[in-house]
Amino acid sequence: MRVHAAGVNPVDWKVRRRGGAFGEPPFTVGWDVSGEVAAIGAGVTRFAVGDEVFGMPRFPMAAGAYAQYVTSPSRQLARKPAGLDHVHAAALPLAALTAWQALVDTARVAEGQRVLVHAAAGGVGHLAVQIAKARGAYVIGTARAEKHDLLRELGVDEPVDYTAVDFAQAVKDVDVVLDTVGGDYEDRSLRTLRPGGILVGILNAGSAAETAAKAQALGVRGTGMLVEPDHTGLEQIAALVEAGLLRPLVAATFPLAEAAQAHELGEAGRTTGKIVLTVPQD
Image (cartoon, rainbow, N blue to C red; front, side, top):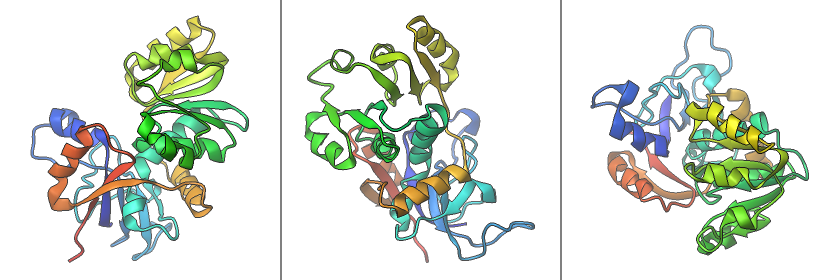
């Protein structure tokens, strides 16, 4: 696959710092890609050379998306949404799949439910808000006051300024919480749920059993999750984009050679939407 744009996610700079399964540097990070099929392997029938595709190949194993070319299993990619450029398509896969798998596959958000999304203007949060609204939910979103107008544009029914009030006191009777923050947000968010409600944490996949036990003691449910490559989910996300129900926000773009500056901006922790790298096509 010839990469036209690569999305930047917090996991990218965490891997850059820690290495972990990637070993010692140098190594290439990144998972979000949008581009065109440059070649196909034997037996591949879903795509042809020249098709425009996007996806999150191989996560959490190395994909090397910060590059001009990547390889991917065909079933970890989907056709790029019609009318969406590569920069905005590259902003979608990891964040939108995280939101989709948390809200739809795990929590099964339904019409009329009350959904609390933390960091609702962030990379995952702003997409989660729109996915929940597309499913007919009443959406509550936490963010600083200066971002509340944006939240309303995205569909948030009830913005909450977490710097001015304790959301655990201000928000009650929630059916679903999407915890994108972690830390003490988990315990506080569990108290906002109505009986039988569910909290899904995206930063605590390794402690899902502990989360579930704490939730059960309160008469609610809780779990952690780790996003997976999923072409079916990508196709559902693309359909929402094409229906005008989902739009990724791009806070900034950087050429591939300035990936370090992109990480510096992301690590500051104040980004609205996503950061994307553009890849030269010469």
